[in-house]
Length: 184
Image (tube, rainbow, N blue to C red):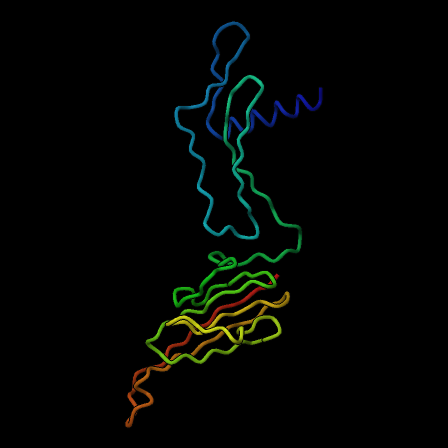
């Protein structure tokens, strides 16, 4: 009986969230009718650690279907990355400057900053993240990087314009790039 009441309450919450309202049809019997279109909020491309969005379909024994959004919170004390963090990206580009990159140990990504500058890359703690040796980088890439163990570090790069190597050197400014790396 308690399970049936709990299921009934859960179904009522789900139907309320989706906009399905009870429609009386006479006597003491009610039929719940979903609206013509049920639209749930679209999940973000990269959900933060504080929310993992899961879409579920709930079907009652009397055939009414509703949609709900469940938000799962991480355990207390878990790190919550800044909004816009990248999760296990395949590539990191200039557009990702100043972002946090979230990786698991063993994850790899290509650093692709382009060919317009001569880039010098440095990593704060190479026990957490380092460049993979013996991999030929693709054109415009500064190498492939791999996460090794849990921790936080910074990847920094300075790009000098090629004309700086000419005689006399040009006065074009260098470009700085930095990302924060968090490995779980």
